[in-house]
Length: 275
Image (cartoon, rainbow, N blue to C red):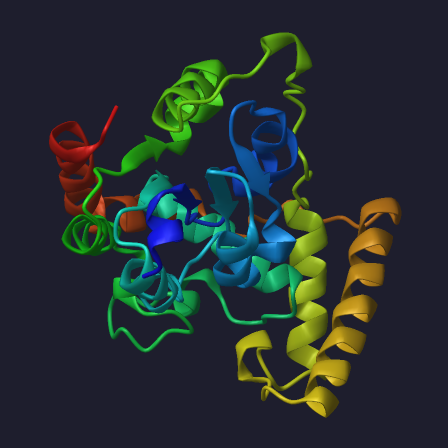
């Protein structure tokens, strides 16, 4: 680590996705005063930005899911003194939100096949939705206590969450300039079920099965565009569909399965969160 970097106060919001990250990145972090926020589109240049910036206090943001350990370790290896901000959500609702994104992007498997809590042979694994290991990882690799936030509190009282972030980063904001409207609106069950059925009939690959090369990337983006056109069409055409994408019964089963992790995270936050 360079001495000049040690003089800088660094903060990394490492997600998770589907916990209000897009809103924070586009509507709150940009309003903070007393700290330089680097937009998420520039996140992977943080080493260069930190080295070249004349600013002494910097905030970076990127939402990680299954890449959490690899990407956070990269930060820890170079900036173990950085402050980490992470937002957690009730496990089953977080899984449900991730599943909705999976279907939107071209996934055709059922919710129970997305994370299979019986055989652990799903698209994602059981451990991908465990949060306590992530919190312990942060504690182990960073010298500064993290700021652990919860999406449910954020949704109920956003300014309480904003105040915690401002206090943790020693920054300020004006309440009158904060727009509380969500950045993105979610798709309806009708739209997602329509696209999932379409994907199952005409596409063999899941979104995660595409190879990491330019040709398959173009194929994936073409498919993504087609599916988003059908998402829009499903919204305006009079389809009759009262089915649920995820049943209440399934959601309850997943809630019970991950309850221990959720409660452990709450206790961990009480003992280890900076605020």
